[in-house]
Amino acid sequence: MSSPAVSARLRSLRPVSLALLLVAATYLGFLSGYPGGFGPVLAAAGVVLAAGLRVGAPRSVAVFAPVPVLVALGVEAVAAPVGFGTELVAGLAGLAFLVWLADDPSRPVGGAARSLPTVAVPALALGIAWSSALFLPSGAVPLGVAGGLLALTLAVVAFLVGRPVVFDQEEG
Image 1: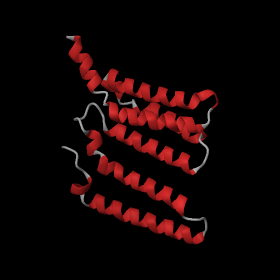
Image 2: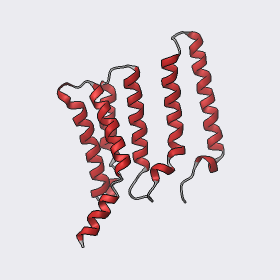
Image 3: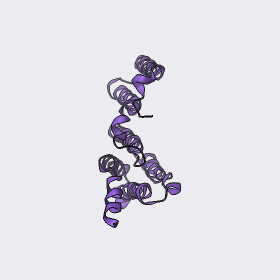
């Protein structure tokens, strides 16, 4: 009788979104530059603790499962050197965190796929910010181009929010 309970817990683990978060956070920990390999260990410990809280803890405690991951990502992001690659990995780790949040075991299977329209807005903002930093030289004119791209992004967000049928595909 304990076999179905164990398999139900393993099924509720949702390994794809968890692995995506683990890889992104661990790589950000590697780039953070903590001595002695502390960054990847901190990231892996935060993700494993969060997964354990989400699967094995009572529901009143499981709601705090995102906290260890947020703390680990925050500590790593503060210590990470400023650079194009590090900023991109930090943004991808944030997106992986959003996908992991959407893939909650208490919700129906497929939460990560249903959350793609919602996660697409921060992904678009990450793409615009990173490409602006990468392709536009510093100065006043490129700042205006970046402002125009930001205004376009806000217009797209306003369009999506104004039409919830396009934006929200979650079940009731």
